[in-house]
Each structure stands twice: as structure tokens, then as C-alpha cells.
Amino acid sequence: MKALSAPPPSRRSWLGRLLTLGAVGAVSPVARAAAEAPAPPGIGQGDAPHKIVYQLNKADEAYQEAIFNSISALLKKYGDDVAIAVVVWGPGIHLLARNPQRPVTELHKQRVRSMAESYGVEFIACGNTMHTVGWTEADMLPFAKVEEVGAAAVMELQEKGYRYLAW
Image (cartoon, rainbow, N blue to C red; front, side, top):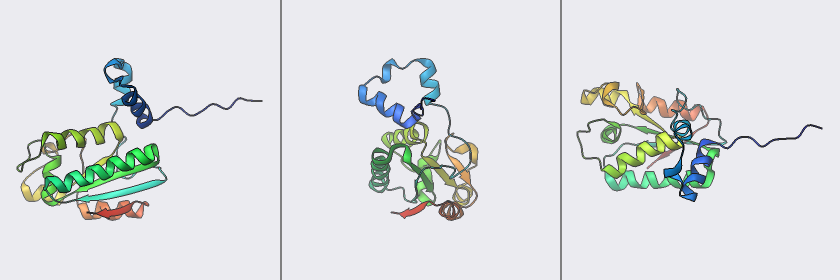
């Protein structure tokens, strides 16, 4: 009889355990590189049983904070069982810019980067909005995915089973 082995822990659960133990500073370079590996390309490719897409279209700090808190709560509740995408357009686009033209707090910059790089949250920038402000993909943060039309990205994610949440 063949022994069953447990699947290897996911990046989210592994990082969660490290943070719980307070061992972030003691992570080996190899483990750190594995945890910082970029997510696979393409939007909405998560096979998680729960999928949600947020609309983020305002530059307002309290509005953005509410969305980040909601995302954090979902990550805490569902761990690896949730795929999260945030489609950003309008005044919210500055959140994903290397050099935003509107104020973006350091805390929000850190939260977005952490959610994208450590937890696999997809941040999708609207190409139409970028064109309006004169930006190209080079003007965006490296983890931001660019889609030609933000509203189309929301629709396509919904077609892949994502639930839409407008704030």
C-alpha cells in the first residue's frame, strides 16, 4: 500500500507561518527567492474555489484603505482558496504608477506591492486611463499588468468565474 503524502505548502501559507513565528529576518536566501518569485503571467488564471475582482477607480486614501482592508480580510479567511484581482482605472491609476501625478502614501505603495508580490493579488491597470494621462507600460510598477480596457478586464474575469465588487 502506497503512503499518501500531503501536498507541499503554498506560498501564502508558508509566508503566513513565517510571519506568525516572527522569522522573517531569518529566512534563507533560497527561501526568500522562492517566496518572491513572480506570479505566472495572464489575468484570472487562478484555480481557487473563490474568485473576486475589485474595481478601484478613486485616488481617495480612505476609499483605497477600505479596499485593502477587504482584500486582507479575504486573504486571512480563505488563504490559498481565493484568487483576487484589482482592476484600476480613472484617478486610482496613480496607485500603480512609478511616478504618480497624484499623492499616494508610502503605506499604500507598500501594501499594494506586498499584496502583489507576497500574496499573488493581481493589480491590473487600464490602458485607456494610462493613455489619457500619457503613460506607457514602462510608467507602471513592475507587478502591474496592463490591459487595453479596464472594463473589459472586469468582464473577462467575470466570464472566468470572478465575482465583481465595486466600492
